[in-house]
Amino acid sequence: MKALLVEGVFHWGFSVRIITESAGAQYYPLPPPSTLIGALAYGVNALLAHPECEAQKRKNLYSGARRLRRAVKWAAFALSDELSVGGKAAAIGYSDFIRSFRLIYQRGVRHQLEQKRMWYGISAHGKVYACGAGFKVLYLIDERGLEELGVSEDVLVRSALSIVRIGAREGLVSIFRARLTDSVKPVNAPTVTEYYFPSRLAEIGNPEEVMSIMLPVMSDRLWEFRPRKPLGLSDHEEYYTPGMGYILRPGRIEVVRLNKGALALKACLREREEVVVVPDEVMR
Image (cartoon, rainbow, N blue to C red; front, side, top):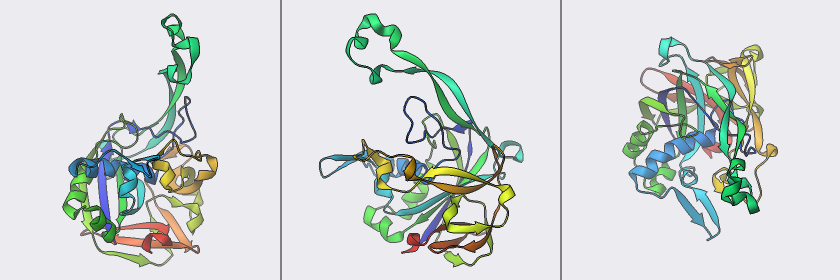
């Protein structure tokens, strides 16, 4: 197991649409693990000339990010003051009204030019404003998976440095550092982490400094176009993340006890240690 630490800063923030939304594009408060894997896959696919989409069994069409999931076993996100403009990071959700193109949802006479005034409508577009906020992402990498995909360590780090957006195309980011380590080992509770994790994995000691958010569970269906079984609210789970009220801030989550099926892993880099709580299947 290897760990890849990627650090950067948001230009204005990000927008990741909830998977059950259509015209009313409400948002996830933080980028889900699947979005983080997709951001990394963008660089891998570009460097190795892999297609953006791939078909399976001549029927299902998947995003190329699904391929990288064989090597990236987990991805966790945290806001960070270290690279933030002004030394402080914060994120808050908001919905902007936008003029959206609605013709794709209409049929019949509405497609005639005489009906063009009906082609557009007003929608609430969910965004998370995090102007100049620093962040860090910890990817847990399976070495055997990298070999099977033909991805070298050099390509992996270059791909991390090539991340240009997280979430929608407008969610521009600048990456400052990407570091890889093979020093990843389990640690016992009690411990602390700055990264979000599913609430089912552990009991925490500072609930007043922690927020609960809903994020999608890790599944191949997240990268499938037109899945046979549509994704819904049942495909989400509760995550713990540092924050208070409506504002997400960097902080620490005190993990007092790990539940069954959970692990705390410590990635040791030169000058720092990063702890993340993950399902034990990550190490299987």
